[in-house]
Image 1: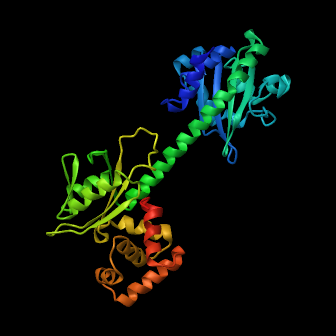
Image 2: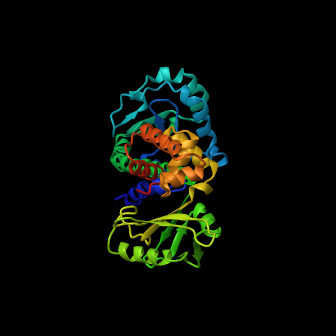
Image 3: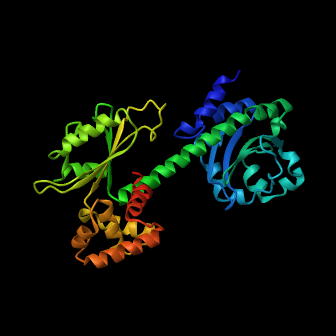
Length: 370
């Protein structure tokens, strides 16, 4: 019974407008004229998100007007205290505030009375991290208070709504994390190429496109990566090995014939996308230009993230790209002694004790390559 409503509730987090299909069904089932799903941060107050549905005429003309009025003005004038409602429970308006007090409030006179809101129920869906989620249904005075069966209908679907909200929150967290990681990868100028089981390109990010389009030791030939010299055979061997093992394989590719050197890290996608995801992605290839060609934003990012000076950050990136202390000193135009001083300071500031740990930290924390 009500399978369509349950399906719509769980589909809600995936909709462009969350719960756009579920709220009308739930509103009609509970006899409400208006329904509001409200997300309220516990530490700052106010609503971070409001999802609504209404059967009222003014909403047909301007469906967002009452919601925006509530968000901007009237949520701060709301005289009702909801804090005493346990999770998964629903209460009538009259159980939370005396009707005479409610009607004497600016909230009622300026918002509720013009919209013919006389009766309401409030349900506490739950607390998720630092956000409280509430479901509020309301209707006019001519229909009377909500009945016991209508309240029971609200209570019946709250567990489903609670689980769907948890899914919604997790999806938003993943989206936010992806955006943050993408920013970090972009700032470090890391190219990412995703390959299928045959080694053909499925997806590629903007930095990888730029690397492959330039005069580098790695190019794109149709749907495949093409490496210079003997590195092509190393790459093919790495893919063969990874088809039977999930251990990452790293290959430093030096430029040949005047080509710009590019470092590659090749690893199995297993463990990144999950064994049961059904993903076509089999391998992930990370591309990094030689540190000399990194943009200034990458140096700034490493410097800010780890608290290094610009010189220490440049040295750390050179070491990450496989250069020795002597080579890094030559590229930076300093003595080996000065380069070692930079390295010691970088180790101290990052809490590492060896050069290999510093390189692993830089790759693991910022490039997600470890």
